[in-house]
Length: 113
Image (tube, rainbow, N blue to C red; front, side):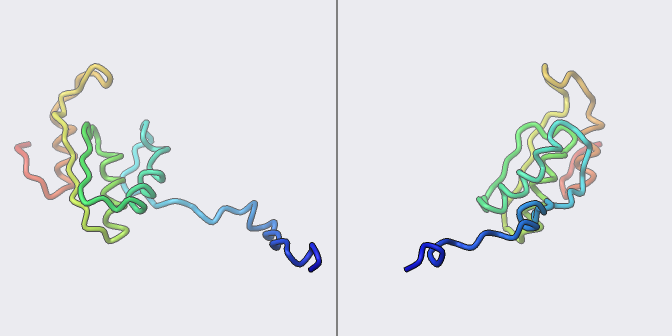
């Protein structure tokens, strides 16, 4: 058998330099610290298909809603929970409950705002 026949064909150069993956269209994008990780979060949910997702420290919801969007986009039955006091912490500083109210306005949660 000739050595040329056993080699795998080389991929087309256009396929190598043109990415097929463009990532999800994130609906809640704030250009915050989590923004560059949102496509990874989307794929993480798609691959692991968790039964439950809990995010500790929701802040404005960019990552939380990115996870939720992936759950919905992939038709998963994952139960999503976001836990936050919306008072701030030593890393983010203090902020008021208005942030929590803006988050719960976009979810089926009930909260006194």
